[in-house]
Length: 276
Image (cartoon, rainbow, N blue to C red; front, top):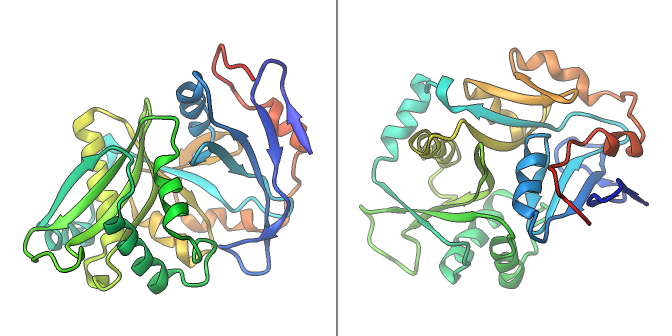
């Protein structure tokens, strides 16, 4: 079913499918195409309203039985690392960062496959081939960067010196971590945490106020790590608020009263001069 606003992007709803975060639940997404001259403005505006980008699509959860997926971002100016996070930074001092244009390489794909096979072998991306991987990285109508991390202390061995990669969008108010993957053999180095910490530093130096982390899902072990970051905000009930005590949001995974899709679309604040 299609829902739209006059002279505005067209919004659609996906068919229900199994939720990847909460067992026994189904997910449904509200989405729109990201294309044309207004793509940058649309991405900026909708990112501030809980949407995420996947290639040339912007989407936001619109599940019929659950509101657990809450968009999360870190206030860079107020963030201070914990002792544990400082140790993570210290353990990864040998990593050297390089930002490149969104261009996929075989070296990246090799690391990506190792990461999926080890961490997400049964996930929705488990069967991605190199062409689908290239599309994920390269099909972006906005300002995106591939940020690579290499360990300068280890010699290259069949491309395995590439330790971590993050596909990152540059928004007008922050950095959005679209997708990241890393060496699955370095579990003790907490590379996922390190990538977020490093993006906070990148944003701080660039004068950007936020780092967008995607969705935090109360009750999901996969997403629990995000709640460990200070100065974390979530998008809930149409506004950004401090996370506070994570347990206060446990009720979002229970069946709520969901507004009709047409009402949800009508409340989306679109940028000026955005046309179909």
